[in-house]
Structures are given as C-alpha cells and as structure tokens.
Image (cartoon, rainbow over all chains, first blue to last red; front, side):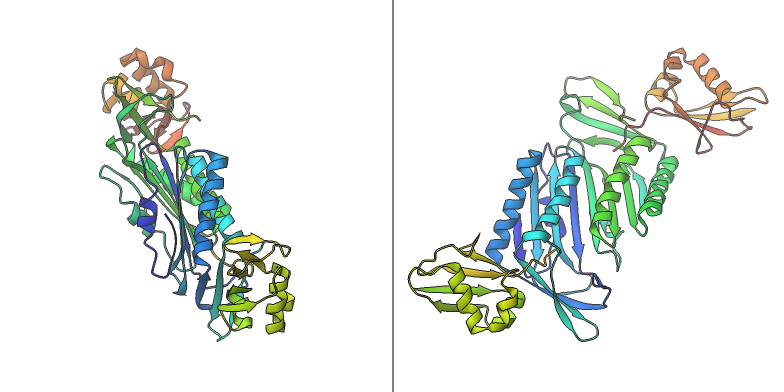
Length: 138
Length: 138
Length: 81
Length: 81
C-alpha cells in the first residue's frame, strides 16, 4: 500500500497490508504532529501538500530500493495531506521481513528516504499566529 | 503496559498504550510464529511458557535501562504464552519517543534484550511429529 | 509550445498559482521555463538552486529539452514525514 | 528447611514437575539445592552450566545462602521473542 491521503490514516490497515506468511517480523513507524517545532516553537497545527502521483511513485521507488538491498520485504507507506492538528498521524511506514533486524533497518531507512526526497511539503502554523514552510535537512 | 498473556495479543492496544503528547515517533515491532524454524524445519505450531512475574519484571527492567540510555521514552512489551499456531502474534514491543531515531533504536534493543534474558521458553512442534525446545543465542 | 507548470509549497505561494501555463519558443529547455517563471515572479530567483524540476514526473536537469504539452513540476526541498 | 522449586521448559520436563519441594539442611546454599535436584533427576547434570537459578525472583549465584520458605526458579536459556 502506497498512498497519499487527505483523510485520517488508519494505521492498522497500513500495517495489515504487509502481513503475510513467511514474514515473521513487522516493524511499523507512526509519525505524529508534534506540539513543538524542531526550533521549539509551540505548534497549533500544520498543512501538508504533495505532488500526489510523484509522491506515490517515490514511495514505490523507496520500497524497490530496499528490496534490492535487503531481499524479500513487504513495504507500505502512507502519508497524510491537508490540515492536521497536533497529535494526528502524519505518516505510517510498515515493513514486514522474514527476520526482525532487516525489518527494523528497512523501516528506519524508508522514513529517512521519504523525508529526504518525497515531494511532500509541510507548513507549520504556530500558536503565536505565524506560520512557516519547514524543509527537512538534505 | 508490560504483560505475559495466554490470550491473543491485541497489538493495537499495546501500541495505543504508549501514545502521548510530545512523543512524536512510535515504533512497533510485531513478532509472528514463523512457518519455518531457524534450521528450516516445517513448523506446525509452538508453545511458550514463562515465569510470569519474573518475565514482567524483566520487561520493566528493559524499559528502565532504555530510559536510562535514551532519556524520555514510553515502552510497552507484551509476550504470548501457551499454544500458538503459525501466523499468530508471539510478541509486541511498542516504543514512543520524542524523535524517531531513538524510537527505532530503543524498540530494536528492547526485543534483543527480551530474547537474551527474559524467562520465556519456546517449544517448537514440527510437521514431522517431532518437537524441540529452542534457545536463543546468548 | 505551451507547457503546464505545477508549483508547490513556498514556490506556489510566491508564484501565486499551483497550476499555470507557459508559452515558450520551440527548442526551449527546462532552464528557459524556469527563467520565464522567474520573470513572472522575480522573488523566486533565490530559490533556483534549491528547487528541483520534474518533467512529466521525472526529476530532470536544466538542460532537458521540452516538448509541447509537457507538465513541469517545481519542487522545493521536501518537508514530509 | 524446605524450599519451593519452580522448573521451566527442558528442566521442567526432565525433573517431571513444574512445582516441587526440597528439604535441605540448615545453612544450605543454592548449589546444595541444585545438587539435590540433580540427585532426583540425574539427567539434569549436563544442564548445570546453562541453567540460571533465581531466588525469590532474583538471579543468584550458587553461593547464595537459602532460607526456609524460599522460592527457587530453575531457568534454562531463554527462548522468547
């Protein structure tokens, strides 16, 4: 499952999509909207926008690269768009692998790669009334 | 949530127990009963037994050691006991942290530590009618 | 030729449109399209280095030649996750 | 004194009981309890090195002195996860 969605993410459906016989370890990452920005401003909420078709294609590329490196894996990546409140799920990455170490490594790399290159953007809105486009470190 | 349970684990309840404001990254590990043993025998099912009070105490020690190393974390560990079929969830570890890298590292270490020292034992039953107590590498 | 320009995030806000059309000379390249966009919104000039451009869904360099009907996407640095 | 002996997994199967009682001389230590268990089930002898012993929930060495009413748990290498 690779998707960008304006509606709240059902993390359990994302996780369920990678379950399969022979995949003994499943690692799921949930990223939430935090109440403090990286530079410690009080966040009121945020908005994500995406180039949807390119974002989904990028998720598929990330998964293909991980399978190239780690062998057999099942990967799901879903990212929210639109307006989100503090505490809402922004992104879910689920990876199933035959063994746990690969599942941990691949899941961590998937979210790193997503942050690096997926065409998704975040505008944070602060309690002081300001807002700002936040870019990930390259 | 730290528990040993004879009834099927509700992974979503375990995960939900670590969610809290300020913990922006949650990593969950699900371990399933695999259809092949480590030495590639066809598994029919297995039975876990545990020293329950010591196992729960060990889960709490693992969480305390992770908080010592990584700072603020919320940790849940639940392990199944009794008879399990292939494909059932054997163990769930959920870790919530302010940032994702710590959540990944702590979750991976929690399951490593559990396998190393928690007083839980596994008897695999094979399709050829044999069975065997399986011990984790120290 | 005409190309479609999709803009996102900071670039979209400065350009004032998420979906617009550019008319370019035949033989134009991605760098010519970017120059035309900056002419329309000069405040985009400082973002030239950090903005990637995709042609029909694939990231390309400024040298990439364009064809009538292409879709260009102007992609500032990612902020997802 | 008497101590309660909880046994698990392979050790339980060889001992033939998960919960039994040992009567030991006053001043007995964990190593004496293990010797008494092995006397009851000699096939346990090869497991001495790999079996950890907990006294009242805490892993202890063979030197640990026992008290009447203690609970000893015989713990083979872990297989959880």
